[in-house]
Length: 80
Image (cartoon, rainbow, N blue to C red; front, top):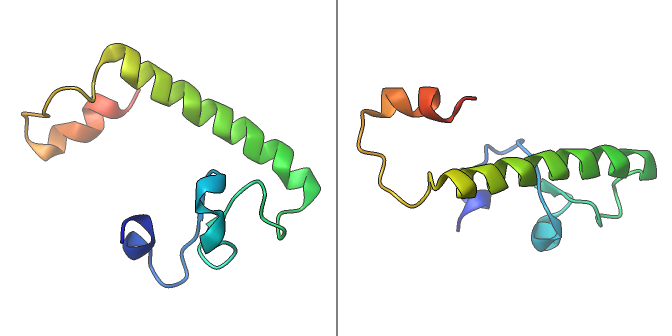
């Protein structure tokens, strides 16, 4: 269960190597043999940006509390 069950039949995601066993059908990850060498640099940049966002969310402690507002405000809260 988890991520794979949330994807549409022809949808794919980019993920870290923890999902390597699902590749290449559903996941593209840096160590997948189907990823061209020139694309790996771009994937590294995307990964670094994602980790920056994760660090900031943790610094702001946004994941420690329960979101107690209407879900319509969720996007406004996390779009920055």
